[in-house]
Image 1 (cartoon, rainbow, N blue to C red):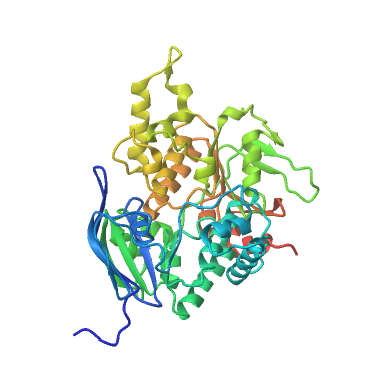
Image 2 (cartoon, one colour; image 1 turned 45 degrees about the horizontal axis):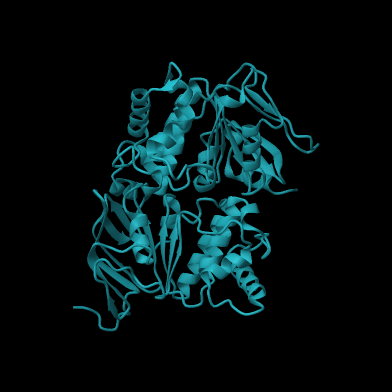
Length: 488
């Protein structure tokens, strides 16, 4: 018998289905969100999570099913949910205007900021929200978004969403993907604070530890359907991996950690990076090494990778040319995908030299290369000729990995590349990185995830724009990394 005194759910969705052409993205999804609960939503890339959240936030319509918002009955197929029902959303892809400053970006979402002093009030609103979520953020209202590091842009996006006064439900789609460990902990602590105040939260994350740490309930999706919906208490990471349908030893391998190389590569440096500042460590990389870049977000790691791409400050002792470098972007919208191109064109652009015969592109070779890497890294797409922007964010990121690894580059640069990538694909990429390194390639890998540093032979910790400390072997652990991230 139903509890007549139980509060009405914030939202109840039943039988929600949505197709994109021949692709069935959602297949009769049921989802109920109650007041004051944090629901963790997990699933592999392409499972339908973002599509469901886009329907829930009013961005997309749906083909079948019904929904209700509180006591208000809504929902005929073909109609989108209303945008004024107290549902906020932080999308996996940042939706900020890079040419506007922090205050001006607030005005885009909060249309009540009008009048002669709206910029001051918008700035005050953003600073209040940023201070509450990310103490010590170092962001100013007049900062132009395009000039901020991606981690700070993510902070602005999150703070802007939480600044609403009538929120009932907040959707967080991979909110910590560009945040360092400190900022991630601040956000998760704030989520718990708002939950205790009655706000409901849907947290989507491929970092299953985050889900289990803050969620009251976990919903697992696979192939457009909900396959598990249970309280978080008692669940383990292995339970979630199994429900998502990943095979092999993905769960156990990630928990036990990788096998780090016991013998460091020898021979001449592949590259050496020299910084003129007296307090900066020179950075050297040998063939076969996986070099990690760590430290707080926005401390120069991305700028260092860009310098390597441009050849600034680089001494190439083994005749490495600029063309021998491939880059895997973390900010795929700004630095990664070509949105007007197909999956195949995005994947093969870096390998064009090897695909030519008699000066012309060989279509058969291009197709074979694309198909091989699609299968190897499990890119989920109905066609290699479809526009890359129709793929989920995680599958777009897989294409960027495949682009780099399918090239002839000796040096692979990776700028926090695991944003939005599911746990099964991560394990496969980790294996590919080690396999390629054993073949002589070197990897320079900036990551905001401590666990990923365990896959590196050496780690440079960045502080104030330069490498300030170096760790190797058993010295690569969280205590040392955190300690070196802050000045003495």
